[in-house]
Image (cartoon, rainbow, N blue to C red):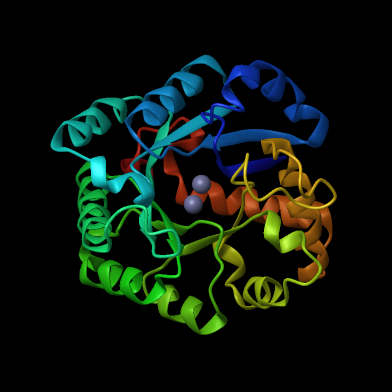
Length: 265
Ligand SMILES: [Zn+2]
Ligand SMILES: [Zn+2]
């Protein structure tokens, strides 16, 4: 079985076909999808999808693109949503200096507030970083005492050196569609350098579609293509890769097994 640890099933292109998408997961050997949020509405939608479908779980947060509109009311909303045990983490939050859709100082403040909220709720944090590794590592390091529930750097795109700095904070790394691109040498190097117990798989659908569907819409079940490529790069068989990543995703997202949250070990 496989888990897509980061999918935007709440995206307006995917949500209307959620029932069909969930129905096709089994064909690809995908058992679970973690629906990641980016603002208040998508967080409410993710929690609703998790309620509706056994295979779907949720994370709630404001993406750095949207951080300019984050308010205290949204933090209260997330506390309410997190009472649902299928809400696994706070995410995706972080820094995106590539698009700069929110002012950088605002992105940094909201990222730190999300880390604080995750800590208060006893949940892991799912982090998006683009062209901002230095500042993101500085914020994570400054908040180190609040990271005891785990950190996932989603769609890791940094260097091995950056990964080593993040290793100090106990981070997990998820690899997505870009790892299937034959010219992505940096991604393959990072995957090979990663601690095997910290590797997760994702699609980030509807974005970042893996080969052989590159250029078209992405779906959670395409995580199988990501898994196949990762197994190839790591030179382990597919079943071993599945077993490894399933164990890792459960070790990060403690609520995945229907447990009572962080207290569950
Ligand atoms: Zn992201
Ligand atoms: Zn995402």
